[in-house]
Length: 375
Ligand code: SIN
Ligand code: CO
Image 1 (tube, helix red, strand yellow):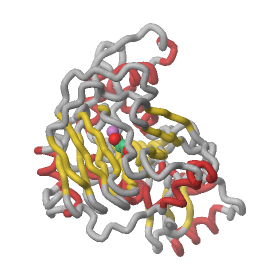
Image 2 (cartoon, helix red, strand yellow):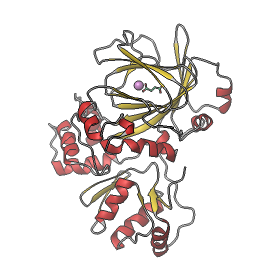
Image 3 (cartoon, rainbow, N blue to C red):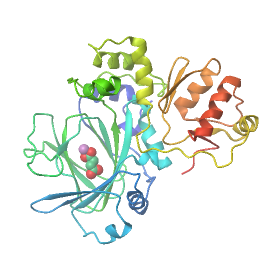
Image 4 (tube, rainbow, N blue to C red):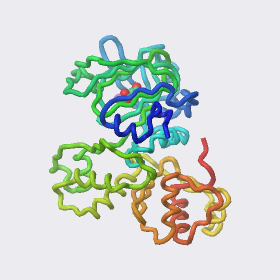
């Protein structure tokens, strides 16, 4: 089915033509885009210690970078132009932003990383730079001019607090309006400048470097390993079950680990636990009043349930990976796979004993909640 999000391309055609290969601009990717987050809410998030935020200011001669949290008064004092606030991992704390991110689940949840939301005053931006991962830049409020150039070895500006390209020569440019989208493969240089107060949602993908992966796998070798290469999947096919870990993904992980004495079954276990590991600052809220298991099952049947926005749930066969833990489900595999793919179970479902036990454990840990997701 053609997809407004991808400019009329099906996910299959998009993945074959553009993914990890060439940029795509989509006008009206989300027609009548109603933003899941207001600017005041973004400023409020930036005042939280557990949310990562940065403030970038540019003047004619220099760039300045500060790390949050920022008091609300900081923003009231900012000038009318040439600054931007960047807030990382907004999907973890704003369910509407999590839902926005999951529109891109055709590449699988294992590849999605997070949504960074930026607010830029006119003239604001983070300067020309390169990211090492695929990114969809979705324009919210306002307008932003993007200039891009193809990958090549770039020089970095000396003494800047951010990685800014010294020799960026734009090859193409567009002004994105609310609801427009720019897809960039890894390595494409880009420079976004707000033309009016502007909000950008950056849906970023996860591409562990071989070095990061080796460290996670062999922590005790941390200081001795040195590896080259990066995860890539040109030719990726659309994933009907976005939470399912495909053979192709497992094999690519195994290839990045080539040379280590590892078996494919070790890699399967490692990849599932590693990819479902929540970011270090994530805390799950346990229910304040815990019903007994039988009551929980009846409530599930009446109200349905949904995964917490920060929960990562993946699976392979009967093996389920939830927030860094691995369990094998003897019964109820289809039900749990459905929960993982859709991130919710509708009312009217009575989970069988084995699945009910797991769901109850996850509920107690705050990994899932009853009813529909709010926001
Ligand atoms: C921004 O939103 O200002 C920067 C996003 C990016 O370049 O990746
Ligand atoms: Co970027």
